[in-house]
Length: 240
Image (cartoon, rainbow, N blue to C red; front, side, top):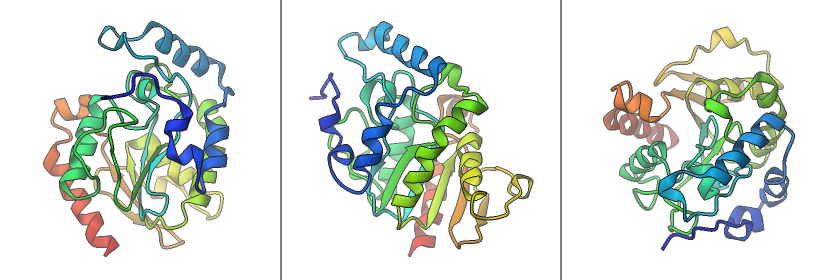
């Protein structure tokens, strides 16, 4: 049964491993007053269907296999998903779609992502948001993204086996490019975002664009299960 009171000791990556020190810092961050106020308000007021939950209401660590060759990069936790459950892509419609797709291609051990104690394991895959907290209306400011960028940079340094980055949505995609600009002379205009757009970066790493698996994209048909699984299949072949 899902634990309705997520705590740091349930995060294996906070407790041990190469990312533990980083994530202990992440979950205590309060650098963005607007976002802190919003995530706290959401956690206090809750959604009616989750009234029995004690919301996490703090920044969200990444999750998965720290030695994975595939890195999924999203925008931010969902207000009543990650902000509630304490795990990225967990407990919301985007998570349902994404993890079901990962499972179909053998990249997760189960098709659902509901809570920290649901048994989810990712295979050769890690996932993280460029922004560790939920922003109002899912629209972070440039300053908020800049405040959070050092956490993503540190993750990239510690996730040493990554060969392919699948960026879910344009903000995640741009966040990845901005990270690589620290080491390489990249011009953003040379890397336009698009679904299934694939770029080999100067260090040999591959940055792959993907429409975000949000209800807005899925419900309008911009993104569907076949599109997602076909893209994941291509990535798996690339990693062989």
